[in-house]
Length: 354
Image (cartoon, rainbow, N blue to C red):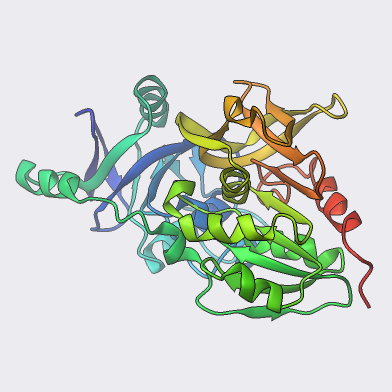
């Protein structure tokens, strides 16, 4: 079936639809060469239509092993060339069937390079995926739909659950956590209690944690004021490690500010410099907001990492407390494992456990 993508600036891109379905959301792009299933199931993409810049997608199929959450939260998928005959020893099914089974609107056979250049030039914008014959009146209705700004509430766990181990007890605030983050912490021995995003500081402390982990997640950190208030009360109580949205929420709790990037950092090939060691690591990233460096003035916080491409803040540490965070995903999945050492640094701040 023929379809089209219409961006907020009026540009139109024609292609083929995997199924007769429509989507509306913020159109972003990811520059990774692999990991399309992890991208589909990363809750940080909630509310977004994701464009993949790498041309051939679906060539190694899909498998349960690569799932990063209980379901896909993306609003739509944009692909240049969709492979119908994958080849990989782990392959369990085709990407086409996966998209159909999970009701994920997808348009393929489009010029993803042109879409990406449009976003880079004009900034992230709203877009819709619809069948080619859709009327202008219907398209206007799609664009008139206002986002609810409740992405974190949509992706967080509805109830507390545990992943038991014999090491230190870590309470994980779930703002849209990826499975591989939990695997990384558990692999190092952490006894995990995962709590909903709106859990209060008092309830977290009642769980008697040795440390607190602030997860990745979607949307604007300022749309999650309840989490900021909870983190404020936890900062001087326990060691804290935050990533991605957790990094931004921690910054706001410390008194810093955040802002929206023109087109964000999304991909598994983003260079970041560790200012403490001078080394550059290739990282996996997925965020549209960043911490405002000038807002660190007069705060007991130092910048620990910077993005090589645009010099934005990619990591910070409290000068006196065992509290630190990074903007990227050290657990990767997909992407390189250059930064898994950060989990070990967090572990070093915690007691040994039982």
